[in-house]
Image 1: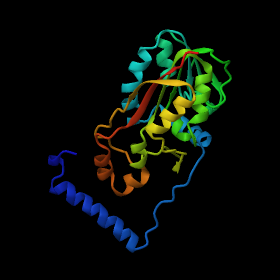
Image 2: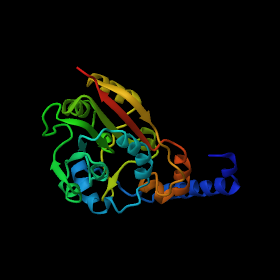
Image 3: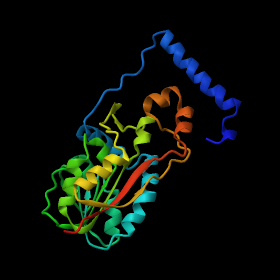
Image 4: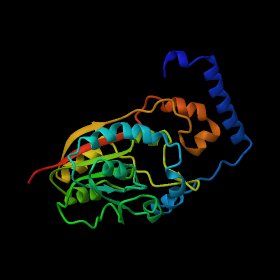
Amino acid sequence: MAGDDLGGGFVEGRLDEVRRIVAAIDHETPLPEIGDISVREGYAIWAESYDGEDNPLFGAEESAVRPLLDSLPVGRVADVASGTGRHAAYLAERGHDVVAFDVTPEMLALGSGRRVQADLRALPLPRDSVDAAVCTLALTHLPRLDAAFTELARVVRPAGSIITSDIHVLSLYLGGVAYAGGRRMPATRNFASDYIRAAHEAGLEIVTCLEPRWGLVAGEGGPLAQLWCPAASAAAGRDTPAAMVWAFRVRPT
């Protein structure tokens, strides 16, 4: 944050938050319990409100992803872990033949076009059958990147494109883990080196990597941060990277 933003009022406000947290601990006030939930269960709950929420990650992510989608030659595209189909619809409007895949039927039911229930690590597509694949805001839910990258490389033709995005690892450390029904969904901390290794082993070449940043965003940091220190959480996230976006090329054989 800029020095002018850290005036006495801001500092005193943060100290008040610290005092409130310490007082709660001293009086043994129970903190809210936040359990875990599977990806399948979580997105089934989230599906109903997913598109209607003011999710600040969408704007940051789309600012980097959409120009990459615009650069794709018109062809057959697999939108993998499509969710409700934000990017599938965008691609279809631009003349692409799109087939969307997602593991959660409740999310698929909200989209349009060809939509197939499938895990992104086992796509019902032949080898080299699409010109490009898109996989957005999903890879963090996997324990490792390898199986997903191997499968994306399998279904995309040689010299075809793969575009991925996910919440940035720094945002995860600042509390930006996906929640549904008050419980956390899995969130693996993938660094740039993890993507580079997985891409290399899958036979992919890196075209570009983008890290769009947050602005001043309310509501970040997860439910505990919003309960105890919302202003501090928003300040901590300002101008930090919101998403990590990659464009890859399948290495020609």
